[in-house]
Length: 186
Image (cartoon, rainbow, N blue to C red):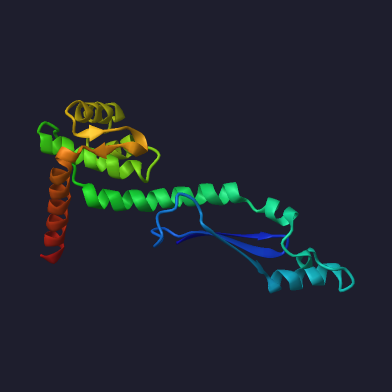
């Protein structure tokens, strides 16, 4: 769970994003808690005196809701989510082939791309960062060739491995998992 916490009008506002929610994957923060902050209330009471009623006792008002920095929280959590999710994809799909020539190589890079587009706003840049081939143009060309070969269909979030190559993609991922488990067990 990713969380951002703010103090707004004497209340504690906690905005959260449950990653991997049992009901499905959310693309944005999906929980907000607004709670009375007794410490903040005591400070405000000390500053204003007991005769004035602190703003916190107005409850959850339209003014309070408009004051919540949702855009900031959303941006902060998206960055955190992308870092976590990209690291997970990287551990699952690497090492990537250094030379891309055979169908299996194209399936492997296409699977890495398909996994990345679900979690990253810059999947091609991430692929370039993970290999010695640092040029995003090279990775774009490789993905174009994967599409031309019929391995990769669709673009952006709609990109998928073609059904004829799905079994190969599953074998590659299973092989990578087995290789990593074997190296951890040694």
